[in-house]
Length: 120
View 1 (tube, rainbow, N blue to C red):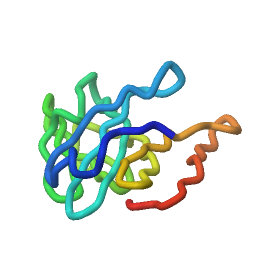
View 2: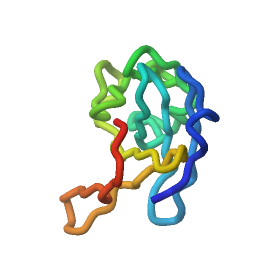
View 3: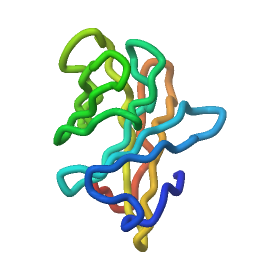
């Protein structure tokens, strides 16, 4: 579980990049449509930070080549991206926003850490 920030420090329509450590890539956390979402920060098409992209409801547009990703599933909705990005569980505990980076217990089977109070 990685602390991100206090919920009031991430206003609606904004995002923040979180360095998850050596085992996991950086994560982009978004506050949109009244919910918090977390996905891998790197676009699956080319190296570009999705936290620097443009939010459109529950979608983020890559700032480099305009690929659009669904924050709920990580799936790309248009070219040039073809591969999804990973999503991560988000919780709020005592007003603090946390991300639970996806871990892999068995090769090829993604598993989320068990959140206490899911918000997205």
